[in-house]
Amino acid sequence: MAPAAAVVGLLLGAPVALLLSYGFAPGGSTQADFSDGATLENYAAVLGDSFYLNIILKTLWLSLVVTAASVVIGWMLAYFLWRAPERFKALLTVAVVAPLLVSIPVRNYGWMVLLGDTGLVNIALQKAGLVERPLKLMFTDLAVVIGLTHVLMPFVVLSVMATLERIPANLPEAARSLGANRLAAVRLVVLPLSVPGIVAGATLVFCVAISSYVTPALMGPSGAKYAATLIYQQFMSTFDWPRGAAIATILLVVTAMTVVLGLGVVGRRYRHLMQAH
Amino acid sequence: MKAVLVALVLMAYAFIFAPLLVVVVVSLNGGTVASFPIESWSFRWYGAAFANASFLNGLWTSTWLAVSCTIVAMPLALMAALALSKVEFAGKSAVEALLMAPLLVPGIVIGIALLLSASLIEVRNAPMRLLAAHVLIALPYCLRTITASLARMDGSLIDCAMSLGASRWRAFIHVTVPLLRPGIMAGMIFAFLQSFGDVPVSLFLTDARNNTLPLAIMAYLEYGVDPSVAAMSSIVTVSSLALAVGLERLVGLRRAVG
Image (cartoon, rainbow over all chains, first blue to last red; front, side, top):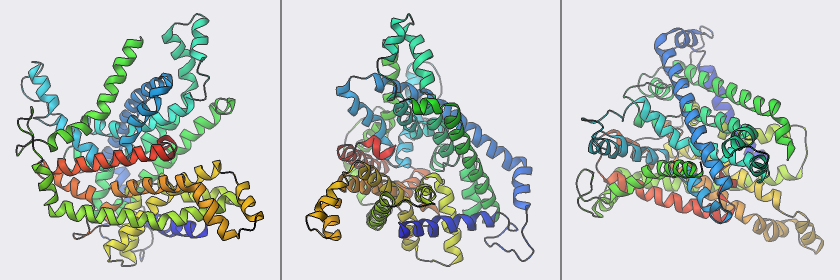
């Protein structure tokens, strides 16, 4: 245990501490020069300048959209898998989860083929006579939302399935025998019981979405338009490491706050559900 | 309503698999650009992919990196999991949280934190930087699957072996390790795939001669696309999915991922 803890402390703890300290160094270089003392200028610049602030807010907003889309699709799939015949359940679940293990640029590439100007989606739309010239789908915020939802949605399936499996399988039937129709049984019985899984999955998806780099870089508009691509730009092309460190710290704080909030909601309001089974 | 649900679920599965399948289709097309409908079929882009220096370099770098980080991380995780299962002490949950922390901290933050550290202590050797980073990525995945296997292991079997005269070490090698083998194997596959597929950490630690395959694919996608990138991507997709099925057989994919 000690060697493993030492590895994580040395390779994660110390580097992240260094990163946090960089955020308080004067900007404009790749050095952290504390000879004039620490400064808040990077944070003032990032949070006070609408250029940076808009990028961060837009990242948060798009991550919320991705989270909502992932919850809707993921919940539905989890419900379907929960109700699926036992024989096919394992296979159908593997089909949803296995793509999580494929490298993200590879998964994004498929969407680049589908959504490009001469891609399958545009060809289909034109053939169907719905549009005359190709829609600009690739290199837009919509493309990023689609790509990220594709990458992250399986996490919601996993966490919702975990809570659904604690519900007695005949509960929807019980609700229906008491007069609820199918939809009401799902909406009034199954859905509320699955809230802890939804919150856990949504928390995870949101946290990963706000700091994801690959999908915005490949599928988004060119230039640094999202938090992670902005951080990359500060570190690798404008070489303002303290500024980049400040943006990364803000991202880290938002992540931590989301996790605490998510766990808090699950823990406090739904503790009775977690303990019920 | 059942029909509606089935239709929606079919659409969701199409959403999951369409982008994976379309890459395979493009990789098998014979033309110089992928235009739909496909007019001729050929394996020529697979040949082109394996003649491409950046892909070959990336394949080599990613493979040795994923193999060696797994080999380093696995014993560390095994020791940690065994120790954590045996002893109770005050800061135990803090240690557990620390060991799982590489999963919680965003990859891009790990990447730049290691970039800053490597530049501070002047680690100019890119393979060293990458290996250190990937051990960090691999560790929690190994730890999680071993801990899961350990929880289901019957600890009295070890006491049995030792009461029958086996030394502590013999009991470890002949009883503990075989019992934990599914967890160990699953952890290694999982760690391998996470390392192999990583972008945001490696992004800041490579150099021109040591580029990973996902980064090579990304670079290729950012500048002009000929279907050789589809061929390389198809190979990555099919082998990753095959390993995922292996994970399912070993410990159950859900246990490994969730």
